[in-house]
Image 1 (cartoon, rainbow, N blue to C red):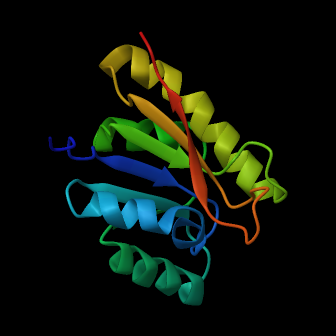
Image 2 (image 1 turned 60 degrees about the vertical axis):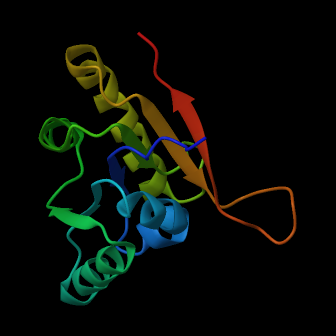
Length: 144
């Protein structure tokens, strides 16, 4: 029995290196079979270059945006039509991570109602009770 191929992903993160740190293996695996788009806010030339290199290493397309706000996330969802959306955990320590997660989650329902996508929403967390810490993504399945 073969497993179904993974669907397209829109991964929104607060910082240029967050995609690799929070969901790198998952995004790289999906990029072998489907479109993966990572989204981060512009920073400076050095950090923007870091984001480009990270996306290339993952096999993902990169979208750098001036602001990662509700309207921008809505537009990205319309353009990408992802099956899966991934972002930071809502209870993360870093305030920019929490803000991005909250913004992304707020933008998903309207798009989901209109298009039926995304069918899955993941928050990626590096904290576990096991030692050593490892990255894991938690799923929130959307239902109609």
